[in-house]
Image (cartoon, rainbow, N blue to C red):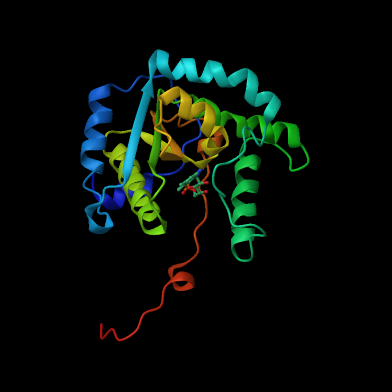
Length: 226
Ligand SMILES: Cc1cc2nc3c(=O)[nH]c(=O)nc-3n(C[C@H](O)[C@H](O)[C@H](O)COP(=O)(O)O)c2cc1C
């Protein structure tokens, strides 16, 4: 698959089919994703991959709790968004939320239904594989950015295997439970989850695409002759 096709067909998939994904495929994706660049070649990423009974056990542990403790869970370990998000970011975030909930017919006022949908994060949207991405707590902004590139590599490689993904910062709200479950060393911080599997292409939540600003909004060009 051409990288352009991988980028064009990747989206945040929020409904998966139960079709399993073998360990060898996940290993191959991670082997290749580790070619992602990182400043000083620190390779600051770490991954825990869960499937089958292990994944079900985690979901079973969380299921009775997240319904009661939504949306905060155990409290986020890092700030997912800056406080008082300013424009244009606030509008972009609201817009994608509106589109997501509209796609499944949840009106803005129905907070309970929104929370229930948000809680599906903690089922990995029914994906057969859940990845947890973490890094050493000593890492700063440049290494968090390196981990971002690594995550994108995983998501694009997944397309080459006919798979889809959803990166999930929402897991930070359950970092204690996840950390204990995967035996994350205390010196590591959980960054996000990644749901991985076969998309349910017919699910309405997968049938819209988040908007993007035109290139001229975020890029400037100078000195080109052609
Ligand atoms: C690091 C990261 C964390 C994210 N966390 C979540 C999440 O917790 N739950 C979710 O449903 N989507 C999550 N997303 C998906 C974003 O909402 C999505 O990328 C954005 O709205 C653009 O849509 P697209 O990925 O479909 O193009 C996350 C994306 C990234 C890159």
